[in-house]
Amino acid sequence: MGLGWRTIPDEMRAFIEAQKLFFVATAPHDGRVNLSPKGLDTLRVLDERTVTYLDLTGSGNETAAHVTENGRMTMMFCAFSGKAMTLRLYGRAELIRPDHPEWPALRAPFPDLPGVRQLFRLNVESVATSCGWSIPLVGEMQERDELVKWAGAQSEDQIEAYRLANNVVSIDGLSTGYVSDDF
Image (cartoon, rainbow, N blue to C red; front, side, top):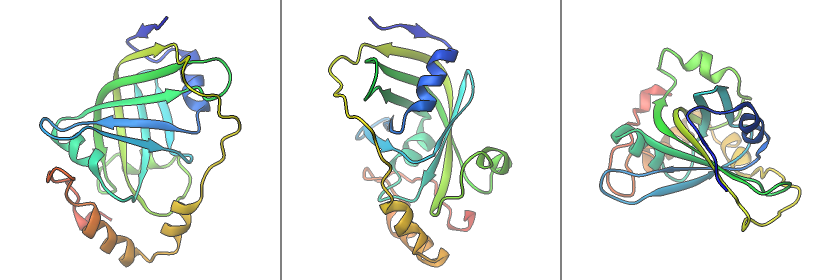
């Protein structure tokens, strides 16, 4: 049976921080729902109501477009080993780019990864668990290195050109708010 809270309980924080994979879901007012898997060392629970994740340059920038439009975000964590559970964080997200005054402080806890594009800060409004009984046991997850290798092999100008070609507009034609001189 699922449980719910208004803030992240300590035992749920420990569960979140132990996960190597999480999912981020956003949607515009009118358009497609986007669900993105996230990995690497890109998540931090700052307190019982605040989570940040470091966003790396990728094939699109749907999350930025949706958050810029309406701020709605859900994060989901699944137990792929141990006791079955699915946990969701519901709330309002903020897009934080390198020119934001809080960037240095929010960026500091993360490792130096190539291709860093922006951060998202989720202001948690509610937390819910469900049984997760149908989630498969996966065993030992290992991080992939393809994205880090790709970004590490690009110059800053190449990363910028990629972002301008692929990260400025969402698949539904919404602006992602990307401003090239932010980086």
